[in-house]
Length: 94
Image (cartoon, rainbow, N blue to C red):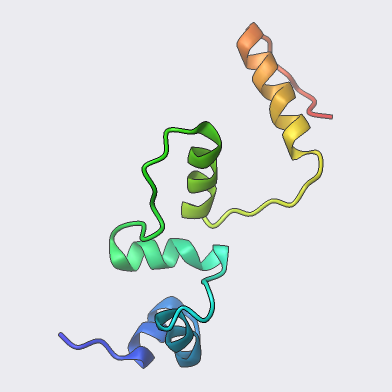
């Protein structure tokens, strides 16, 4: 089965030029495009063998196409983590 750039671009909802640029490593896919790429390939082409929690969180977010820019995200995570460690439920993350 021969795949064309046109067919793949339609499948991934990107332009033919985008496929060309990905093939030549001129640009990287946007994070939101990663889940469709993983679905198409049947595996994560960006996967690493990391046991580091931060890297596993990054991989989880990448696979799901999640990207959050928040200066307070680390603080929110710390509050939730501390609450879960102490067995408390935290209704507020601020």
